[in-house]
Image 1 (cartoon, rainbow, N blue to C red):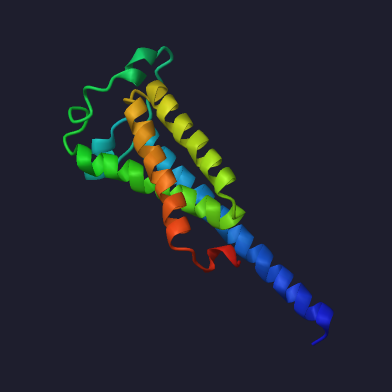
Image 2 (cartoon, rainbow, N blue to C red; image 1 turned 45 degrees about the horizontal axis):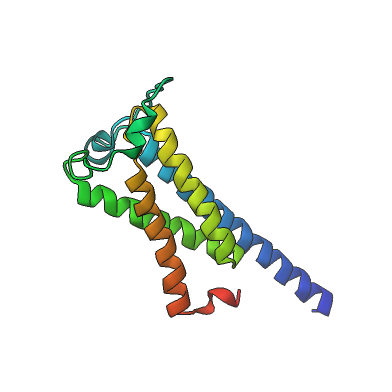
Length: 155
C-alpha cells in the first residue's frame, strides 16, 4: 500500500473514532436529560415510565432551597450519586474527545446548569445543591486524569 493509502485509512479511522465519541456524548446527554427532566424520577426508576409536564411559571426561589436535600427523594443517596456519576461520565466523554480540561469542564458545567435550571420548568425540583454535586463529579474527572494520566492524551 502506498503512503497515501495508509494516511487515508488512518484519517478514516480517526474520523470514525471522533464520530463514535460524539455519538456517545450525545446519547449520554440525552440520557441525562431524560433522567433530569422527566416528571417523576421515582416512576422512571421503579416503573420504567417517564412523562414530561411543562410548568410555564416555576418558583425560581426554590432553586436556592438547601434544607430539603434528604427530603426530596426517598432514596436521595442513590439519586445524588447519580448526579455525581452521571456528570463525571459526561465530562470524561467530552474530555476524551477534546483533550482539553478547560473546554470539557466548561461544557459539562453549562450542561449541568441547564439541566438543573430547566427542571424547574418540568415540575421537578432543580436545586443549586444538585448543581454543586454535578460539579463535584465533573471536577473529579479532572483530578483523576491528572493523578492517573493514561493513553487518553495520546489519541
